[in-house]
Amino acid sequence: MKIVQLWNYYHFVDIDDPILNIQHYEHVQNTMIERGLIYDIEIQSLNSFNTDVEAI
Image (cartoon, rainbow, N blue to C red; front, side, top):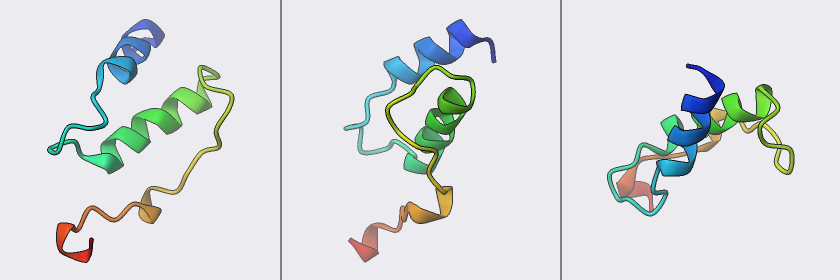
């Protein structure tokens, strides 16, 4: 994905959307960090995000 497309996609995603796959969102965020588009947070392990609703 080109940088402009990635930037637009990342900022378009609604993190409050109940059907959002949080692991996908974090993967996109990590890609933004790797490409130098986000500086204020660190890359996070995707295994640290539990999407199991019953565990909440």
